[in-house]
Length: 183
Image (cartoon, rainbow, N blue to C red; front, side):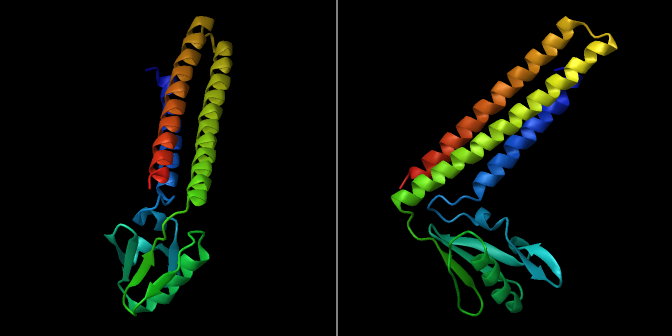
């Protein structure tokens, strides 16, 4: 691989990794502790991820249990969950917060799949933008005594990378869609 295309491959890889991380936060019927990744609570004046102030476990397929290390955090964690777009109602017994996941309706599953596809499109657009940036940079090389054939080879290499990452994004969307639609 050419040194000049390496940084664009890294950008495409980061785009796909970010997309996959984003998909982890979408719940697919089973309890997944990653849906809490975006949530944080005020811990002594600092916004802190829930996983850093509590023990998060999945005791059953449809339940997440959050056990804060300090009981004073229970109300703050509940507030963060209610304020989020998770659509879950936390319940607590004074020590542990429980999040019970209702069965997803057919309609909700289809909405989630649409959302996944939209996010997939966004990831593919980002990959194509990286390709465009790379091609623009390669066109500027012609002013620096780089042959047209060499520039064409660089553009072909970036196109192959683009195709690879777009295919990976499509596969990721299909896998997540299948996971969501599986009852």
